[in-house]
Image (cartoon, rainbow over all chains, first blue to last red):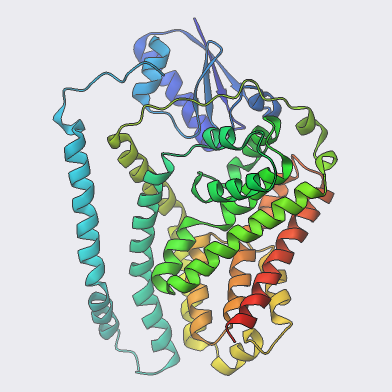
Length: 78
Length: 351
């Protein structure tokens, strides 16, 4: 079970990122626990300055803009 | 990430092919642009409007400007998308954290021109900067320069109005960002931030390492093109429509008397009108073009444009989440004063 956090305050791209992660996890058969972090102070606490951000098992792997599907697959499989 | 994207055996991911295709597309763009006036003239000829009439003037402006502005926008946005793939807000922040004011303001204003920014990302950016120890005044220099000195506006001004006006806009936009940020820094207004922002502490600053290839950068350009052109084309059509109306119908004497150099009160008046208005930078340029052609003074017109682009009511509503109304008032006041100064200075210099 991987813990995935999508950082962002409900912008369109943040939703799209969450959907992308769910789709990739399903495709790869990886179980995930997806959580949305919308609180700005908490987001800043992860050390990023642009959203959406992506945190997998406590590690920031992405910040700013929609990540690419191939990259998401690589992060989930790592 | 040390994890390399698995090398694709597919020839479609060959960097040579991508760079070649991108260059070919740019050459094709210039070939088309070169012939664009002929095409527009042909379309204008088909309209059969009475020569010299108001409606003919307006229609010509619209027919000539629409394809021109859309083509220019596409190229500029693509180029900036590629350039911007070298800059990210996280990297900019790492460059600015702990900088002294003064030099920090200059660096912030410069980076503001290149770093991806939209008002929807203003809050996480602002909190991310301040919580990581970027001084408040330096953060403001960035926050003012990022929307105000806009590469789309710069590219369109360059092509439609001329390099002198574009240069003036760049230099003065950055000057306002630097000076305003410096002043806000001197005033030590950290106490006027919302309390949670003051208390927010950034975790160890993350610079997500990228492993972008040439292909990724070209794709970033294409993505920017799709995204931005898709979002702003309507603004542009509306802007050209307004420009066409001014060009065809606004009586030159009247406009010159209102926005000309003689009217000292016109600079504060246009700034007051421009602040609450929000228009995309790309939409305002055709209006600027039409105003200048009708005898409006350069300083007054630039002041109008900058106040529309740099300050808007929706942005203030967004910023209210992180700062008190008093601090927003200072921010608006300082920037507006800077724009006023630029307006007067230019009317004076170019008279």
